[in-house]
Every structure is written in structure tokens, then in C-alpha cells.
Amino acid sequence: MAGIYIHVPFCKTRCAYCDFYSTTLSELKPRYVEALCQELSMRYNYLHNEPINTLYFGGGTPSQLSETDFQKIFTCIDNIYSLKACQEITIEANPDDLTKEYVEMLTTLPFNRISIGIQTFQEPTLRLIGRRHTAKQAIEAVHRCQQQGFTNISIDLIYGLPSETPEQWFQDLQMALSLGVQHISAYHLTYEQGTRLWQMLQKHEIAEVDEDTSVELFRILCEEMRQAGYEHYEISNFALPGYRSRHNSAYWHEVPYLGAGPGAHSFDGESREWNVASLPTYIEALEAGRRDFERETLDKDTQYNEFIMTRLRTCEGFSLKTLQQRFGTTYHDYCLLLATPYMKRGWLLQKDDTLQLSPEGIFVSDDIISDLMKV
Ligand code: SF4
Image (cartoon, rainbow, N blue to C red; front, side, top):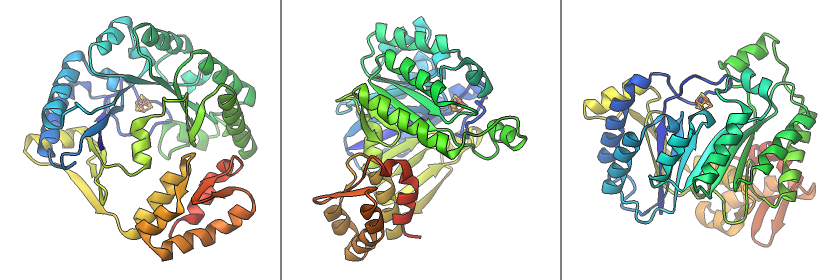
């Protein structure tokens, strides 16, 4: 099994916290679609004919593409890789794009999952972080998708926003839960260097939440989601039973995937590739019949680090036997040696053959994961 990720790099405007690769050069859309199909065609053998299980349109803002754009891309993917075995086809969308007509159009395409970037329902914060929609628009967008028959809807939220209080985050979660969506991803804000929000922080125009508040916000998140019946299946991801993201779960279990589009990453089991993160350069290269990308072959330390980093973030943790089989006794013993103090503190649990974070360990997962990694 394998996955395909399509990076759609267009955004109407840039949000203040975002450092993903995207561009406001919407006039390049027709050339982008052609270049994307050219890349997909050039890389026909990257996944060695593995059946495609998941397809994910991420961004940027995929909901900036038109019906004709999607039809071309779907036809191209189906012809080259076949979507017969594909179980999950996701589109990321911004609430302001999800008009009645646009959602109706999406239902005529093969999408069966929609992921809506809401981030917060607090109006002043939405404006501060440069989102293009209001809370009302976000709520209406979810209702519209539900009315049009989408039965697998995810929303993205951000917590730890400037000066955010536990009460505000609790309100956001109650609103999110009242929407009845199947999946919620919630990420703590990080101030990425160079973003507008980072600059505001440097100038003391906004205040970062302190560490105690961060922990409290995460505690509220875990508790409210648990009470509402969502499985906490990865540190930042919650799903009603049966609605885990297959695409992201595949990433966390090292399933190969092809990432197409500017800045997209790919993984074939042994190496990673990443396309140039510039739309004009990406297009020019493909129009000249070549790809502009870099590749890194993963050495054993890197593979081990990725195994620890991705598996430990999931609720299942990982099998020590699998660790031993894949990396040998030295890595297995190294991992257990460094895990022992955390097991004694009750932050890591060993259940038979499995090592996983305890509910308390999730709060300090970054420290534990980085300690278990090879430097
Ligand atoms: S819409 Fe998404 S990708 Fe575009 S700037 Fe905002 S957060 Fe970044």
C-alpha cells in the first residue's frame, strides 16, 4: 500500500503564523496543474506499482482550485497510479472558500473526506493571526459540508494562541464539539522564525502563553475530547471510532508516499525527496522536462530516530520486537536503557512487547522522544 500527497501552493493571503510553502501568485494556476501532471507522469514508477490507499490534497489552500483543475489532476492520477484501491481522498479547505456552489462541486468529485482549517472561534484572534474567515463562516462551512453529504469531516484548531486563556480554549473546544465532526486536529502554536506573528512577539506587541498555561490547555484538550468519545490516537489528533486519518496514520507507520507539487516531500522506505519550494522554479523545471528536487538516503540512525519520533506519538506506541528486528540489538538496548528512567517515573509504559507514552508522559512527549533519539 502507498499514498499520494498533492501540494497545492496557493493562498489568497498569508496567515501571520504560517511558514508552509505557499504563494499568492494565483495567475500561475494553469501552469501549475500542467506541471503537476507532468511530475506525476515522470515519477510513474516511484511507488513501484503499490496500490494507492490514500490521496491527500494539502496546502497552501487546495480549495483555491477549480472543478476543471481537480478533474485534470484526478484523471492524471487515475491513469498513472489508479485510484481503484483508494479508500480515503482528502481535501484541505478554508472556510471562506466553502460556498454552497463550491461544496456542491466537491461532492461531484471523488473526495470522501474534508479537512477544514478553522484554528479558533475567537474573532479578535482570527483577525490577529490573519485568517480570512470569521467564526460564523467557519461554522456555516462545516454545516454546509454536512448538509451536502460529507460524513468524514476533520477540523484543525490551534491552541496556545497569543494571551489565550484556558476559558477561551474551553469555549473553542465546546464549539468544535458541538459541530459533530468526526475528527479534530489540535496543534499548539509555534512562533516560526520570520513569520508576522514571530515579528510581533519580538516587538512585544503580543504575549506568548507561559508553560503552565500550555500544559493546562493541553490537559483541557485531552479531557474534553475523551469525555466527548474521541480516541486520542496521536498526540495532536483525535477521532471518533472508525475515523482516524488513514493518510496520516500511514505516515506514522512509514508507508511509502509520493509527494507532488512545490515543496512536497516523498518517502520510498529508504530515502526522502523534497521538491524545490518555489512555484516558478518548480514549473520552469518541469516545463523543461526535468525535476528540481533534493534527495537524502536515510542512514540507520536517521531511520531509527524517525521510527521513535513517529511511533511514540501514536497511542499504540511501538513493538520492541519490531525495533529489534528492524534495527538490531544495539539500537534496541540503547532505546530501553534511555527509556528506563521514564518508565520508572511512569511516563513511559511497557505493556508486554509494547512501549508507549502514559497519559502523563504525553505532556512531556517532546523531551522523552528527543532523549530516546540518536544524536
Ligand atoms: S491558508 Fe494555510 S497554508 Fe495558507 S497561509 Fe494560511 S495557514 Fe498557511
